Image (tube, rainbow, N blue to C red; front, side):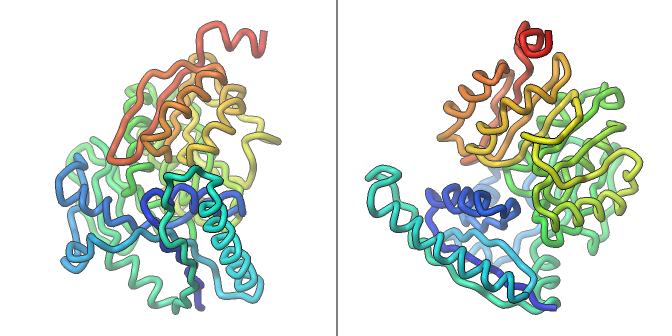
Length: 334
């Protein structure tokens, strides 16, 4: 089987805009290759970081960032890629006409498709995805790697497939660290909802930490399939399930904690729905937010009935932990 990689070359400033474009088109799982992330790791800015770095990656820190999504090579998906090319060109045109302000630079915004054989796809992941300790307790490892956990470590087995949730990007690791912190020793009594669950990594992590009822929600059918495969792989199918759905409609689930590793615009859009799906004293943890947008996102979260309890940062990214504001719960349901 062959795959199509649609890759957009952009600047750091353009990463979020391209990712938002993908999401508006229904593509929620992307792969971001940002050399600044590698520079942070080499400078030991990440508490845990990678335990394996290819030498050739160290020598390419001056390359431009790319944002990719992947499809099976079908006629329908080839048409989808051509539509994405047009959307990228429109984004560049909007930038040049000042739609986003006159001081922005989204880079080249050049989109290209690359056809990948199945074996090439697998080898690419095997080369660059290695066991990584993400939090005090949680370690993420690919299914093809061997790893002997230390005392107290909990290992999440992941085969990203078409879902791209490996835990190593700041957006996921920040969310996972806050999840572990606020679950604390009471995880067994907490119901969790993971909005935009991708590969299922956060939901699986919650189960390993002790939660007994976790619901993952995804709008992408392929991601739901991959998430459920990973759930079974980690033997937590009695605690976790992933379903195709949208938090804003048709979801009947009240959680003690909602996780939303998305993007800034989506976090702001979904905050009101999150407050309606939380129990009293519930915690809302959102990630995928650029630091430069943390204030506007925090204000939107507060306007949805939350109070901010923590903002964690890692490099250019941040995650926000909030809880339902006292008295607001009663106004919603009283």
